[in-house]
Length: 220
Image 1: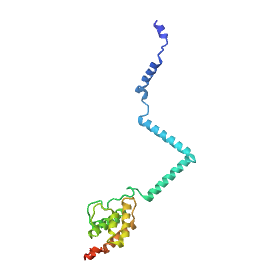
Image 2: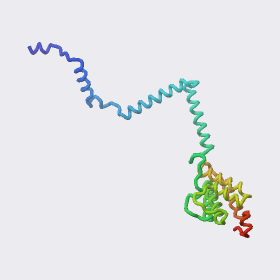
Image 3: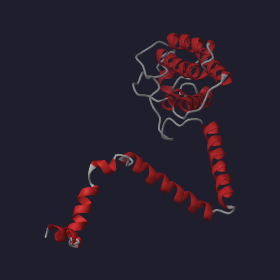
Image 4: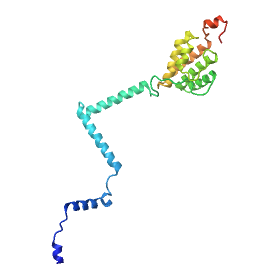
């Protein structure tokens, strides 16, 4: 009887057999060499990149070589713009305050400017010299000390008592903003122009307003 039972084939229903196989294959023994979750994600990503590249090369004249040529051209244009315009540090059109530290005298700003110039740090030298220009005008009472003033505002205000230097003041303010906020790079010539402006303004005599002249006032 036992032998007869051993000869009878076992007929397991389909659904229980599928469930038994699923439980068996879910055991860790069968998944020791499976790729990790990160590996599977990377594989999918690179498959996507490969599909994208193949699609782009198919749509570009010249196929893969044409796509490579376009990519090289884009990189070359980007590098040219980066070199020409410098690294952007602020949104165009915005302007920050002229003085970013505590109160310092014009003489202190000039000393700092000369130290930077001697070391070839033209950006910092130009910035300090522009601050010396404005601080000097404040010390002479040609500008009222105003926290938060920008370089352009200082130049416009200083142009009233010093109309002969108004254009140079505006140019100096624009150079200061371009270096400080526009990512431009100053050079020795730019600094020397700022230094010359500072020296000329120290010797300049302000134009008295009618009210001041009528009252017999004198300018510093």
